Image 1 (cartoon, rainbow, N blue to C red):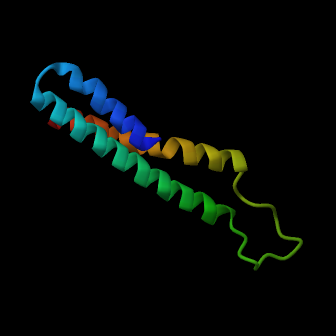
Image 2 (tube, rainbow, N blue to C red):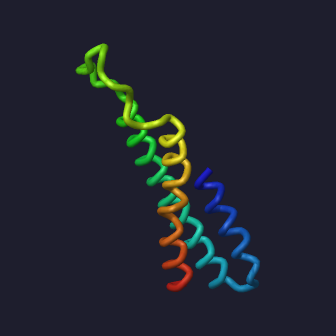
Length: 94
């Protein structure tokens, strides 16, 4: 999904009419896709570690400290939140 989003940004930005605009749009799209994909991968690892059962719990221990809904929200929102500052910085630089 991140790669498709980056390609969409590149295609939409390439309609400026000259080569420099298309090149900067491609760099912008690829950078956003890379950041989003890597943060999504990291968020997936965080969710797996948070839900992993270490085997050291006793049957009477308290329930898990994290709600499954909260972990799903973290996994969905974290890549978007991480790519927003990158998009702002790239927009100022390009």
